[in-house]
Length: 210
Image (cartoon, rainbow, N blue to C red):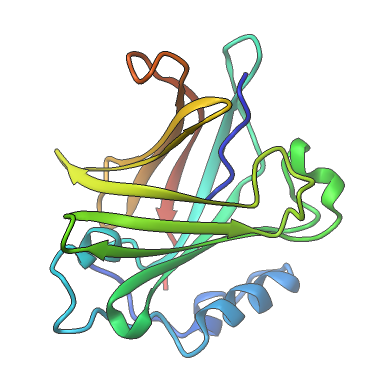
């Protein structure tokens, strides 16, 4: 199996702390509350209309994750919490992927700390595509990189993110079956210049009730 990608319209207006009320993990509320700051924000009235393509995900999501094994079957992995907000004065969308130190997938278990990955997403009006830049706190010890970039577009109801080819081949990430309350996500690789794609990781994200 190739290396997994590390996580690299309507929203509920929630208080960061009230949205996490009842969560028993002490480090979890602090990490997410710090990311949210004063809240989820909103799109600026002069922001490109396309801002809502990722803006529809603003809120807090619980994600069930599966990884493809060497034998080709699917195996459940540690779940995550994915938090999205508007950023840069409502002209961009930012997100935080969170997994607690005591609930990491096997390939991250050695970290000994919470795993955090954040991305900033802004729509490039001139070139009619999204520009995405992400980074994580793996400190070079995780199976994936700690930073990267993607271009993205919405087509046929799916958001497809593509990154430049690297030593592993071509990589893309797809958000699909998007609805107000859930969406699916998958990470794929191609070693034949995009003729065929192999899904290595997938998830179902469900919006957390406010």
